[in-house]
Amino acid sequence: MNRVLLHTCCAPCSGAIIEWMLANGYTPTIYYCNPNIYPYEEYLIRKEECTRYATGLGLEIVDADYDHAAWQCCIAGLEGEPERGARCLECFRMRLLSAARYASEHGFKTFTSTLDSSRWKRHDQIVEAGQWAAAQFPGLTFWDKNWRQGGLQERRSEIIREQDFYNQRYCGCEFSMQAMHDDKKMARQRIKRLISVMTPKQKAEQSAAVWERLEQNDAFRKATDILAYWSMDDEVQTPAFIEKWTTVGKRFYLPSIQGDDLIVKRYKGTLKPGEQFGIPEPDGEQVSDLSPITLILVPGRAFDAQGNRMGRGRGFYDRLLPQLPNAIKAGVCFDCQKLPSVPTDENDIKMDFVI
Image 1 (tube, rainbow, N blue to C red):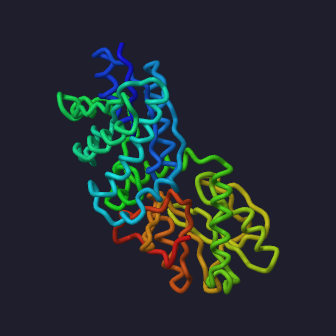
Image 2 (image 1 turned 45 degrees about the horizontal axis):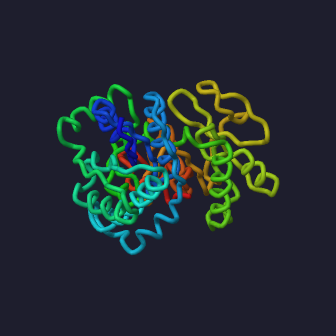
Image 3 (image 1 turned 90 degrees about the vertical axis):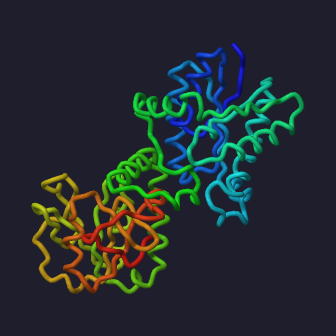
């Protein structure tokens, strides 16, 4: 079979191309080079899906390093360009130059890219970038086949369903993300997948960074009584933060699920498993007077820069927060939970700020 290096952007774009190559006498080596993808958790999920598919077919996959900072330098000054504009061309040139270099160094005569399968991209830009990259290395050719033709686009959709691929709704970078519009179900599913690939170390580091930012905020500095939450595994971690500030005079309150509502209890150092989901909650009675609370730390599935919040779908906080109309509401989340735009409805309560 003929050897070809296949630069791969994601599994959904790759499936039909790889299948066609194997059926037509080509053995692709998969080259995963996508420093444009944001956030890092998104990069990991796309890489894992590509790896799963390639490994299942007995194909080699090469993982290029993720260097988003270098990519940002590459497109500096083009951040405001529209999709399919000059920024995309520079992005293609960077990624395909990396593929061309690897191809030249490892004895490939031909390379191509699954970028041409994406509905988000222009064929002429990909060809221009690929041919330019190939020209940097003598004897190397960019295969400029249009991978959307010949029934491959239809087969692409079929393979996505057959393989149950994670299928993103934006090209990959933070700028293309601006145009993404998830519904609530899709957004919750996507955020759940992003958090699932975070390691305990990453969660701890990002949690520490969140609390460091909060500690510099005037609302936190002035607050004596704070409604927080005892974190689950997929939330910004609160135990060490609560214990730290309890010892220096701040009073914390935690929610307790009672039926379809949240009630508030004072945290005094001991916890018990909650009745519904086993989430730790304080011993003791419900706090009826919430007026001393001046700051609320609100978890959620996703937030945006406008303060919009999307919860888990049960509406607990949307029923609780109106009981504290004068308290400042701070949305708390990991980086991957910050979206350009959060789908909301009339029942969703906005945050005063997001950390």
